[in-house]
Image 1 (cartoon, rainbow, N blue to C red):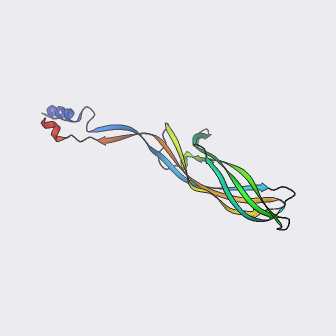
Image 2: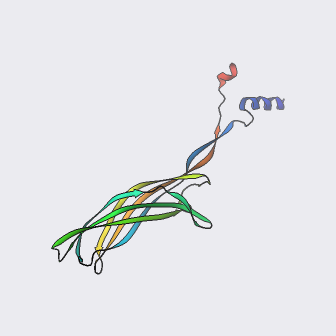
Length: 177
């Protein structure tokens, strides 16, 4: 009798039982990070600045992120990009103004340990800007140097293959036909 019930259940659910495995891509890990860069920009010797009048950031580009080995046991996501900083300043005791344009390259590695979730071996990486680069401060340093602090934020997702086990419901109408 027990064998007959077991055989009926096998017919009803198939050889794998009432569950099926589905392989799909899903977010296996994610992290949000803010970065602050300090950059020292030299201005021409002839134009020693007397005051920083303003700053702006243009031409921001974010390259596709990639997984990279940090050391022999650790991997992380490498984020690269670039932007241009414009500094408007006065010189010659405030009698003249000028703008200097300085390209800035960024490269940051976010260790895999920083990600929430489990990162599998087969993966792809997506990076999104969540906070545009902003100049937080600009100050004159000794001589002809301007010190600026730039902040930006990114959100990174690691997508990988994962298996889901789903319960399969038997349609009672199929049994009657």
